[in-house]
Image (tube, rainbow, N blue to C red):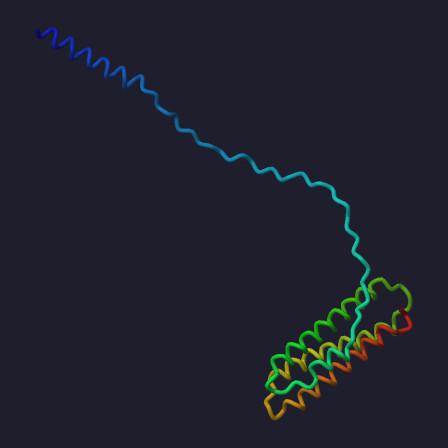
Amino acid sequence: MKIHRQAALAAILGFALLALGCAKKEPTVVVQPAPVVPPTPVPTARRVPAPPQPVVVDSSASWMAIKDFTYDQRADFIAGIGMLANQLDGQVNLLKAKRATMTTDTKDWDLAMSGLTDAQSYLHSMATEVAKATPDAWDQEKEKVSQAWARAQDAYDKVRTSTTN
């Protein structure tokens, strides 16, 4: 009986060891990321910018729409001045693009353009000043903005109609 017990115990231990020894262990795998390969650039047609289009500005109508605003309407007035200043900025940018293509005598053009950029700066500063205006100074500050706008538009017209067009 002892032998059978020992044989049975040995058989059980043998199977247990065999099972442990035969059990598959998953190997540890370190996955390396694939190298990043930038895409091959595809040649594309070069886009040629369109020539600047003339700005059609009805400056009197723009100014006329806001010139009579009261102090209580100052937020709308300031927004309107901002739109006028943006309109002027667009005009200046178009003129600068035109100047970049000019090859003939540009002395008169450059002088007129200098006046326009000065007027542009003055309009921007007046827009800042009118935003700080008190009720008592409102009409005076509006008048300064009016003069700055007229000066800027006169300067724009002078550059636009210069002899080196």
